[in-house]
Length: 483
Image (cartoon, rainbow, N blue to C red; front, top):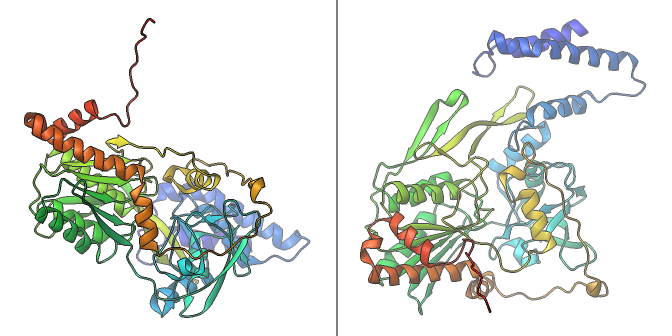
């Protein structure tokens, strides 16, 4: 048996499989000893272990151990891959929530970053910040993100029950959600008439996102706006092509937005703008708001516009908020012979001028922090999922423990009739500290441009002026006064 297993592994390591390149001799030698050791262990277990061995489950765990080299690489077992494949090709529907891009198996909770406006989850009472601990009869602990998505999706008008933890509620809440069609967009646009500032929120990139951005820019130009705010907070990505399309509204046709490099640093693709841009004067400030959940395609867009504004003086783009998530990796799903699959990180995205965001994200021009102390849920979400570096394979975070508010122990959860998503968002934005600072920056830009036009000849000189005259992210210098 030992010889048969060793030959099997040798065949896998040294032959071409599904068109993949042959592993070279030097790398093959690295695995020889381990292949033989694994074969020995299997033989000993088969011969001497007192219990019954589930070969499929055991080998699946062994493969998982090997494939979990980074947070986004993993082995998709046969059932998981089958469910995902069917639900991508067939008529299957979701509940309308935005989740982080990854989950540690040992975590007992999984946070809801946002709910889709008017979607099934919002209608049923699921809220941003809720922590999912169970889906139907399946505990979240031990599940990968792909398994969670497979459990949440299903046929139209079928029900899925989620058990959640919520701040200030002493007991878990059980909510039943009816699956339905989910809109592929989350966009809102507003005008602040007192300041003549135009605002666009994009919580995910869809096929319509480019049109939304074009609409807000056109309207801002027609109404001689003082500035545009593009809010990408909690935008976990979406369609990569949409980011390229949006970039094409700002940058000359044919401008590189990102490139993809695979093993050895070989460039395997360059993505360029392919449309005629809008004529945006450099005197019009564009403020992009980001946070630690701005990820993937959205941080590529923010970073690319920031780079061209800085290095080429093409735009007056200023990024404010927190460092973005830092996901610059590319994944492929590769089917395997036993009907399972491998989700593999095959490359990294690079922004213009060889700029990498992997693991560090986009650094804002003006760093902003929330004024109010974050709740335990927000702190837990940030430490566990709010950064690429927090994911498994990077820095292992510690989970904050929930402490129920003693004053709420006697309260029974009451299902309240919430305002529609748009109205709730409008109320929040009216008091949003980040948006207020964005508007203040636009006003400072307008005042400075009128008073000192020479200091606004380039984006960088304008940034220097704003940083020296607008206190937002720098430590103040103090000197003593004798009293």
